[in-house]
Amino acid sequence: APRGRRALLRTASAFVGRLGQGMVDAAEPGTDLLLLSTTTAPLGWHIAEALEAPSLGLYLQPTAPTGDFPPVVGGTRSLGRWGNRAAGRLALRVVDRIHADAARDLRRRLGLPAAEARAVRGAREAARWLVLHGFSQALVPRPRDWRTGLEVTGNWWPHLPADAALPVELADFLAAGPPPVFVGFGSMGGGAGERLSELAARALRDAGVRGVVQAGWAGLAAHGDDVLTVGEVPHALLFPHVAAVVQHAGAGTAAAAARAGVPTVPVPVLADQPFWARRLAASGAATPPIPFAELTAERLTAAITTAVREPAPRSGAQRLARAMATEDGAGAVLRAVGALAAAGG
Image (cartoon, rainbow, N blue to C red):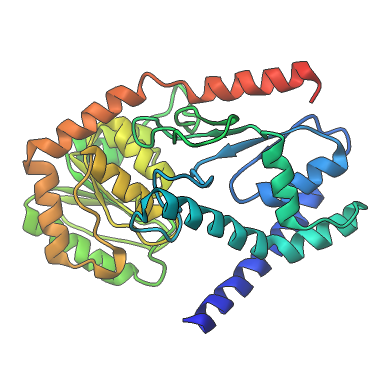
């Protein structure tokens, strides 16, 4: 509804305003390079201009308009190549609108001349501003209609110390039986912890599998001989030991499951999660997405059963993992940073 959209825009604009204040506080004269994410770039461009410092885009989502697919956020069905590009341009205009007040205030505080957010974006595009995208070409091939300077490098993985190990209780649980199914929703599901806990426990039991349930922000908890509740655990350590991953399909968790070569049962909640859920399913590495609002124990049981009993999801996940293993996303970033440093910005 229009009223709901206006409320959402107001909320987003307020968040962006606080983000801008934090970025100004963090920026210092003499900064060598600004590394800007999808969410920080529309404000970071102004800071880079004020500091006369080079900047590099490091995006986890493909936000540039393309005919290959609709906008990552809000686009659930292809509109054809022309329609997808038009929808992508509209999505960027919405982003600029959300940032407009914060950008205007930011430029004033930085002593910069007035300039509309959309115009600043246009200038970056015209200059072929370099954006590296940290996801796999095997999951999202680089759109053929993207301009020069929009590159897909492969994922950037969290650092894992050489001596990192699973908690003893979790390692013992894994060794005590067949690979369990992981269930976790990360920062999603706040306020629904009790319902999700009951639903997960029932689905694991009805599917006849063991489970590792991650508490997350929702506070999930399940107990029993065949299920263990855990807190924060590096995905790179745990996922190779599970039979499947039930998850919200955020960019990082989706990639971690694919990297481990295990099937995903995607339950997307919002933002870019439906996009990644569809991509995993299209690659053959996941069961069809179950929207969070439509999640039931019966649907989750059926999806878990498919993921662990049918060979196709595991085969698809392993195929995707092999392709991802050939990519060096972090190396591409290091080379780009080195080139900018050598060029003096």
